[in-house]
Image (cartoon, rainbow, N blue to C red; front, side):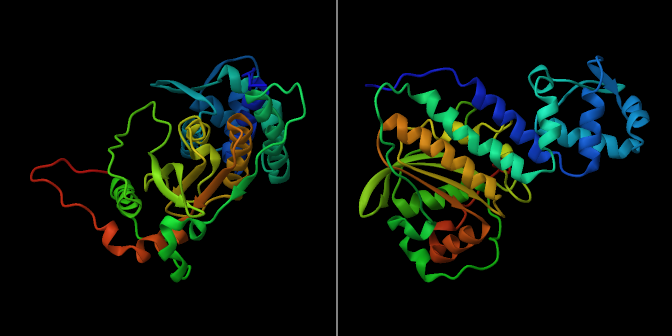
Length: 303
């Protein structure tokens, strides 16, 4: 029978818990988070948080900024600065604090989402075999076969995300235009990639140099939902690229969505993570394709 969409509230709950818990690293972030969400008062000033935690003002502000970026709390005013609870986060405060600093528990929460993700896309009334879901390295993709001759090395020298995307398009022979906008499901969608000697629909998400350090699932989009959006594409191959290290949780998160996509589409799904080392190998294997385009006279600078 055809797949029927159902409610995904459990998967959303687990996404909130795991993403925030993963980023409550270090005592300062956790202390500020707990201070904001403790008690009935919705908002607290920086001075109140300083009194509650014993942290310095600068430590509170630094932790507060980090928590705002992952949407773990809100900021309501600037003079004085007040950090406020978010209703959907407050509902899972205890679970978030309980999972913080416990990688095994966070991993278990993410893996539990496999079942709820499948329930979201299919209502099963008869036995259903899930099509294969396979991780492929950049070396396994025919379109990037030259990479096999390049050894792994240091992470790549950074270039503009737009120039890197243009380089990928040159390699695979994609001539379409893919402007960025708020509702996009990825940075590049193409039917020109070859895998297992066949053309295949592929969707790419590039994480540019605006993000520093290791890439976690919660870093993908303002709400950590960029991976979900990527797998909404009608594709069989899904690729995430970053300039530096990629966290192990990124692989498990992509597998969860790949399983859900395979159930929904009833066809094999492949996923690939290209970290800084593989990015450097790509650029070394195809040096001519990654030459930045010259800027037009008087053109505004790009990020």
